Length: 108
Image (tube, rainbow, N blue to C red; front, side, top):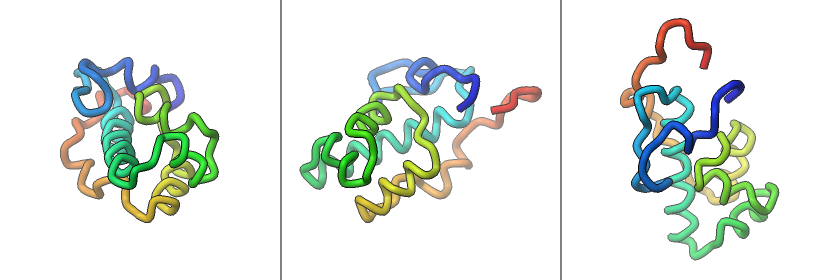
């Protein structure tokens, strides 16, 4: 997200499974965390390394590892490539119901 720090910077606990967003986390952090968890779980279930998932999706070999570690925000094109390559959804359609509303005046 433009102007935001990495998703990892807005959380406490180990990414992705034990991480919790702090009170300043923009909505994108919650989404990045959910995608990181689903992506890692799917890779493990399929017996694939993060590098293998990246390559299967036609991404930079380090892309999935960086997403799972909370270093980057995955963009829509990346999510589409990953879901298509893995043949599974990575994002719960109702996630918006659990994410705190953005602070007024914040553009993220």
